[in-house]
Image (cartoon, rainbow over all chains, first blue to last red; front, side, top):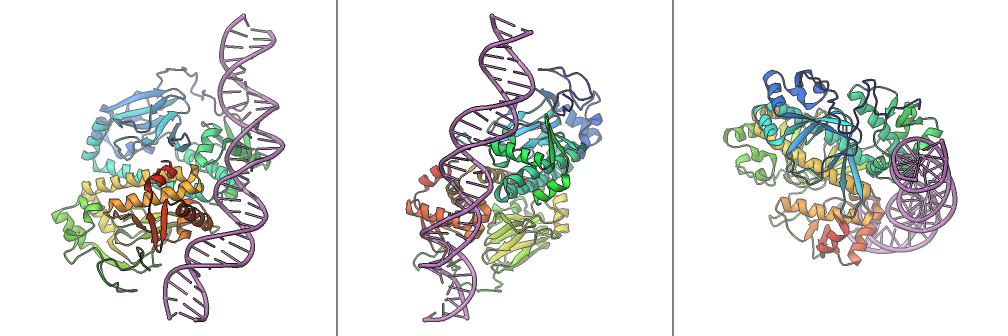
Length: 253
Length: 253
DNA sequence: CGTGAATTTGATTCACCTCAACCAATGTGG
DNA sequence: CCACATTGGTTGAGGTGAATCAAATTCACG
């Protein structure tokens, strides 16, 4: 148990366990002192607007496997992830599943302000979020054009991510998919300030498979192949990117 | 040559052919009298705002195969399609292509107001568009929050389309992909008021293949299979949806 | 009609899936 | 403290759906 990136015990200290009320990433100072504010949509707000946002916000903690909302649920709130990782998935009537993506720290759920959610959101690790009442939030959006602008920018970013992913799903081989997935995750971690060469994988192999349009066995095989080729090193809870250049080459972006 | 949905001669009359200046769908009355206004983002505007939009707009006509803009081009304009169909594609460095989608009448190109275009846009048929200078358009967006709201709604819709498509690319069989593609196209045509059982296919088989993550041969085989099964009837320039219920069942949405 | 492009059809191959063990780590009850 | 079950992951053998390779055919257009 030497390397343990997936462990629920960061340097912060002991984890309170199930049902914990610890609000990771948000001090008692509220939105103004929020760790993740500047990398989230909230960065669009200052002073009185920020106070107004805070007034309609609520802090929420989720245990692993806990469901935040389900596909087709009435969207009566939107969320901002402040800690942990959330799986966003969709189910086909016959049971086939696709994992649309993973929401990390700073990601916003309900960007499009939809009537109903189009995906199911489930915690992969202990998760903290800010919950905003949808009605109050949309009212704030109406009043603060700059917030909508920010929301729209973010939606545009999501759209390009979606395009990248469609290209990946439609035109890449299994090995390319896995390599591209790892690199994509790394760059998303980098966006939020995590630049370790050891990549934490809070999601399981099945989740990765359902995200890449593969089976769990193929994902496993490709990871072990990359490991054997010395491109990565599989460690408990994640992978170490040993030869990122080689991965870039394999991903063929 | 009995059925001819792909023919460039709708009831309107003769087509002027290459290089034509005819502005389909837009009378001389300008934006206020525009056929497609109410189904496009322009519906957000009225009166003086609409005049302001019109002042920065320019009508453009494209011949088939003509390129409107290319991937990574500086986006110095955004567009609204008023007639025809546009292919939106992306290229991988090694030449593999993915067709992200097809823009039809009423669709907006540059929704996210990006710095650079992420796709190449190419006319599949004679196309007419409104061109808006990007700087002037974003200025208008800043002044008219309601327009941004509309843009954002549309982006949300695009995002759900992208999600549907990711599910399709990752988890569906070739036959399901083709069936779902035809039904999806039908519902998009319905949105713009075209409800004929005969579906025009302005794109080629290779375009469909690159859109669905298949090869041209597989698309052809699946179409002929659907034809043999009496679910569709292949006609020049398109297909007739003979048994839509059967298609729905095959698409397994 | 004739020519080149687009599409369809056929034969064969292969990348990934399916099915089935197997393994390691963790938890549980006696 | 140890049999036993459970969970998540890996590995192997064999099958298959779609890709690839190769023509044949139809279509568009001068």
